[in-house]
Length: 547
Image (cartoon, rainbow, N blue to C red; front, side, top):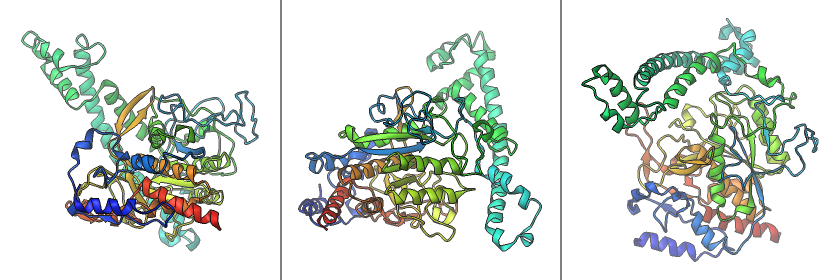
């Protein structure tokens, strides 16, 4: 450890926990140590920038020095997402169970949701059927407004309708672009599928289960069967790119579903659900099956396991409440608003939302739900998105907490970007969105270990995981300092992070070599730090108790 790190470490450890928090300060490029060897360490997010030269959450340091003699309260984190494998070995001990409900086909707690033992699925019906494919929001907006705005230009629109008309035009343009792209992708995918299927059928006697290996390919006698050479070459490409029979066929099916369902204005997934998605008061629908279709949906499982990884040493203190609203396509604003209210009403302290969409038809319902959560002291944490863009300039993704005038409507909402283990120009995850105004803080989101359904695991990356880790840290703070408000926990997470001032890669189409100081990529300019956050939380909590 060089002198700079040593001095900072000594200075920080000398700060007593009961004192007002003193910042580590900042880390600049001159002090960087090469740490590329952690690429195979999927627990790197636990590490510490000063002790390990890894810009992690400092969770291990917090466990060793702050939490080792303490015991916290139980905290519920609601995960609003896809479906969940609640029986996965990494999740089963953490799944919330409704204490007021029993499995008896009755609504024991009188909340309108029958047998909501493990949360609720807002994208199903009371026959146990579930939505798989759903419209993109641009389709819903066109369907909703076309009777009002179709064949009209801006000169025919009244002032009070101009915002709605602008949304309609934006949706119309977006749908047109998506249809063109989807048609091209489908055409290209058809060619790839057809070529592969021809090769698959020609070599079926060698690979009856479609489990391809280079060894078997090389054993095929092409002198006797020269007609097999192009098929062998095709399967070599499949092996090279680590493709599979299921992957190639399902990708082609996905492009078909884009055109036939997700981008089709004549297709409306709510016919299956049976509700009116444009009526927030039509609120009793769905079913209690949050754990179906796991071969299709794995995101909720991955996100939940990332949250639980923060509590590996505190398992009894965390419960995950599964709430399903995300299909293949875009979520409905009504589902999200009602899921937030469900989480609040059933005791969640943190709500994780690792998803997004470009447009929002009924964002006011989500705003009301965010305010409802704020009134009940619940913190919402959302992923910034994986489009590699500056959302201050290129547009935010929903849900957001800013109105049409870009003013925050509440103080209980955190938007999180993704960082890596590289203490250099690659500190920002390449795919992560960023923005000095609209992203609040960054957290590790690269090369992490997450759960896949059916007791499988994977190496994973994305702002979804950065959001999930931040939700875990927020839950940890609430567990040990339950007298803090959601607003206080939000600002503790932002203010106590470690600031990195050196430039990182933020390429654009016009400037592929663009660099930006890391502390200019978010409102706080920092990466979440558990150790610092707990020290600050301890100080604020004691001050509140002493009043």
